[in-house]
Image (cartoon, rainbow, N blue to C red; front, top):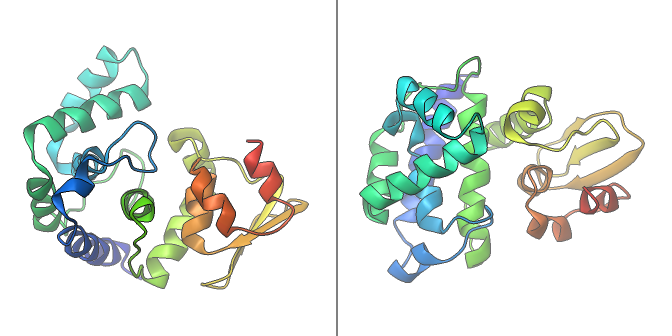
Length: 208
């Protein structure tokens, strides 16, 4: 499976969906804490708007905090680009193969899948995400790399079961089941997705 091709298709699909949002939707809060939908869309363009040297300088300025550096870059991009420009740029760069250092396409693919839901879920909307993208995203979100570098919750005490793509990960004593998208969101701290999950592991996710 060519994950870069999957990533390109998902970027195109999300851009098409975002094209249908009304202007007022862009200022509304997303599921990504502290970010409006506009800022999330700006962040999705980070792979081609922030070059590695600039990111290193931003990281130094943020005193080593990756989260703080990413937040600043996202807000700066949103200040420069209006929502439509963010969508157009996402579509224009759909085939980009730039990835974070040491990571492959699974990282930006998971980022895209989760942040797409961050925008659409509070608006009562959704889009069809391919099974390949969901499988890759959930596998990455449950990995050690995601725990260490992206703030994902460890599943060391959980067994995670995606009910829509036949995927089961982990070997912990507490089971949590639901759609792959809801599982990804919940493991990355989106509490709104917890109501879409079942199993005795849900209470563990609620408590952190």
